[in-house]
Length: 563
Image (tube, rainbow, N blue to C red; front, side):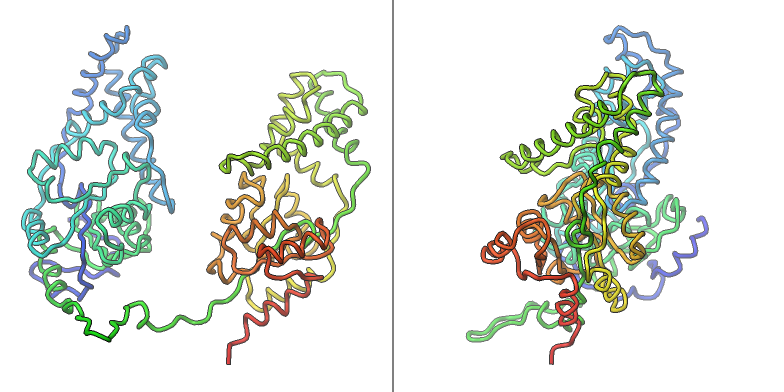
């Protein structure tokens, strides 16, 4: 056996001959990985040649004469690259699975001519199903039949949760070994579009079996995929059964399992022990109430609030810059000169003005869309500059504007107004920093980079936490996604978040629709006082305030323990 990595020592390791396993909560369901748990594999060295021969025969129908050796080399290189991709994906919090056509067309057959690649990619699912049994022989691991029988005897629900490029092949292998009927659900990454360590894999299986993840034990063989997934999904217990990949993770993993076992057979004893130790279900007598487990747990410490601020109208007051169009037009003129296009500064400035008007009209049209999925999409910078600003400019220059779009958006952000901090906001941000209240931003803007520059000039950029800007998220307020992006960066429940804006729709309705606990609107911003009062009356805001400094009292009250 290979030497286990140092972090493995932190886990609790037991074998059939060792001391009794640590006590674990009794499960209602058992979720098993496919490879490394239910099955071990023996590599078949001829897999690439065998599959290449099949694909070469398929090539005849495509009108292509494929060299078997070339196809074999591409398959081997592609599988190696695919393995590297899998390892890298394991570092992500919620990795997606590759589409079968991506695997075949962009990995396995990447060295073949484009038409052949495209044609064979149409058969991707069938190719991957054929590939799985060619790559390795599958053997049922020791103890699996007895473990499945124990689960059936004790009424445990069973599921498979596995990364796989062909769930179709895995299902066939289970059937061939007479095991398929044991499992109430089989979750494979190629069929659900996500892959471990995405916790959604385990949650999908638990939902299908009618249990909560906390009521299931998850059994895998890898730290970077299985242990991480189990912990993120909050499985009741996370168990490792050692296989060839267990002790050689691609990178250090901080998550640890509850048990590390040599084989699935070693799981039978701790599982039976946990089931035997489980208390009998409480019997409810007439006129009595059985306390819910959740209500008997110690109450957590009071949550601390977090603060989200709009930028324009809340952090910054702006006055329009009358030279905006000419300043940005000068950049366009310089770009035109570099590619040999004749243009005047007046024409360039007019293009900026007209393009901005088209952008504003486009936003109004989007707001009227019935399709909520795209109603609040932010304009793509390449569209803004190449299509809206560049509508009346020569095509070569429009192409350059598309390529230079992020820089042009930053230039426009810098030029369009003269910013200054709104009175009271710097004191608010600094008070929050002194009192450990995280401050984030949710802002509609054409350049989040430009907003960050302004905050740095104010001397508070380093005090800002999660900042969600519409140009970077791709959705503008009142769309929920831009709020969700900022909220995801807060270690706080939405109910404990205070959001401050100056617009009844974008900030008031948008914040409430995002589930934020307290929504405040500031007078003196974009919307008139009457609109803010109407939002308050309609329940789209909780408070209407005069100054950012007023938020200090609101937040201080949240920090004062109730008596």
